[in-house]
Amino acid sequence: MNVPTEHIPSTIQLVAPAIKQYGYLAVFGLILLEDFGVPSPGETTLIAAAFFSGLGDLNIFIVIIIAVLGAIIGDNIGYAIGYFGGHPLVLKFGKYLFITKEKLEKAENFFNKHGGKIVTLARFVEGLRQVNGIIAGLSDMTWKKFLIFNSIGASLWVILWSLIGYFAGQHINLFLKYQLMFSIGVGVLIVIYIIYRFINKRKVR
Image 1 (tube, rainbow, N blue to C red):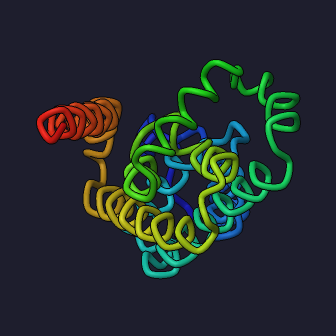
Image 2: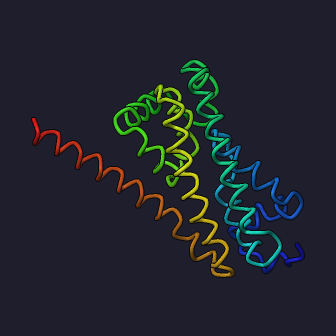
């Protein structure tokens, strides 16, 4: 990868050296780490890898496959932590990731009410993406159900940001400027859905 630093969009310069040095391994590792709660620029790494693919330095299809595998495996590690470690383990180490007992209880109630759909949508929401596997495990969601919905969410998430990174080129900063707005939008849709379900239940009663 011989792209001069000044030609690399500022939003992905942080992870560019890791991708330049380790290639697909960096993509896999950083996404995997992010997906079971370790602070890691997984989404930025995915977009950066797709950007370099657009320049011909990486293969976009391999990036997508590697990223999907990293996302699924990472989330399943998170699920195992939540399922086998339980609340004591998650709360003990979660304090370093700003996971409190109150936040955990709210998230669990949320997952218990809406199940698989939230596992899929959580992939697109910053914060939820990093802990959705852990919370699903704590909530005693069956592993098969989690695997199916998580795989769907991971695939959609990887494909979306890979295409953006691949085709945006030097305009990638513009897309990433609205990345937070996109996450907020998904969060708002989730809230609207919850309100809709609540109103319907009251009508039925």
